[in-house]
Image 1 (cartoon, rainbow, N blue to C red):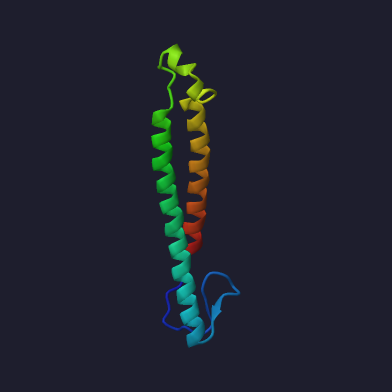
Image 2 (cartoon, one colour; image 1 turned 135 degrees about the vertical axis):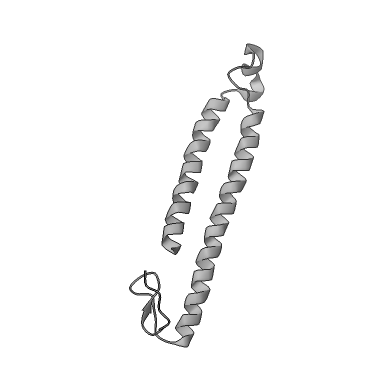
Length: 106
């Protein structure tokens, strides 16, 4: 990474994304702002998913609940362990997207 005040022929993210004029500098600034807003959007979606998944998991019967509750028709085929496994995979995907996005912006 190189810090310079010279904006002529400046490479932004890709070799093809270069600044040649004041207009391209302005468009690049807007592009970087949009990329950063997209990153914040992904972070917010991740937070919302974590909150909703925690709420959903708390409603599911755990392995400690008595046999009558686990065999209820309302929760047929659903358990907290199965839901947690699925949620961990989705959270890991969100994390991977966030890490990729953050390195991309950096």
